[in-house]
Length: 251
Image (cartoon, rainbow, N blue to C red; front, side, top):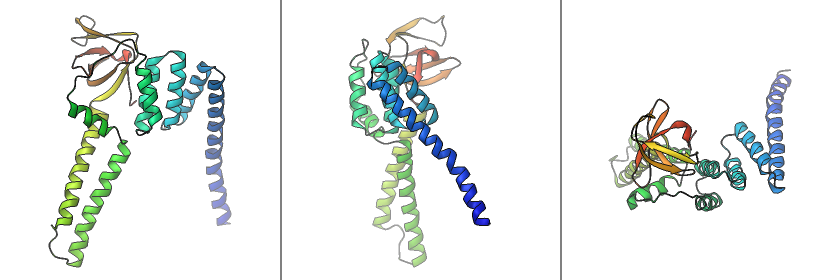
């Protein structure tokens, strides 16, 4: 009787999961068919619905971005390519399509940052947050397990060359994790969504316009104040923009 009850409970739990997965597959197939037949608006709508269901699938963002490129909505395409890269950072197709789409923009910003800042950004974006923290925890576990092993087995000095090496690796992993945290949650990536966006010297309509930007430009959100964000461009320019004019990559 107990086995039957357990089997029934497991079945009741699995049925909705299987049905949801099957429904997602049907919608995905319909979206792909719409894209291939040229109905890119319907395809985009279906991909959006898939993202609402499963927001951590890079393929959905990638396909949605492709549909937006076909519709001429470059800012939305770039935003979703960036979201796809956040989930699948080593995907060459996503990077290539993002590079191509950025080449279609009318307004461009020169990247005048130092080479080491550019290199740091590339390195940090080569892995997801989960991967970085998983490596950090794994190295920490090895370091602590090694110390416990030496203490319990009386193997002599704890601070031996091997432990020193692991400790250095641990420090490097912690440094990378700190950089990833800053990149993801402190200095946040965002995309300009409006055809023309005005950046002002202060967070108010009454402040003077500092510069203007076109759609699809990538900015870094440095600060927030009510309905305004202070953004930094790769050329060093900084100003306040309305929150409605930009969309953060990490929603």
